[in-house]
Image: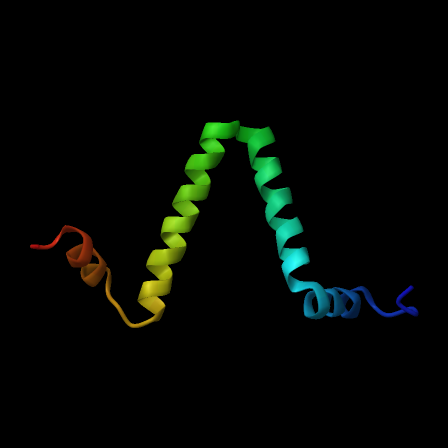
Length: 77
């Protein structure tokens, strides 16, 4: 099917052509395994922690400090 290409090239080709599908499959696999291992509610908690960490890390990468985030949500109004 891939003409004897090495596995790494096959994976890179799949990521290039079908990035959304590959990432969706990977995400579904990880969530499914987490539910099997920990149960539904513990998995939801882990996913929420990962999302919070992602968004805080993204703000940090964009040049904001954690204090800016804290002030935004809990500062004076």
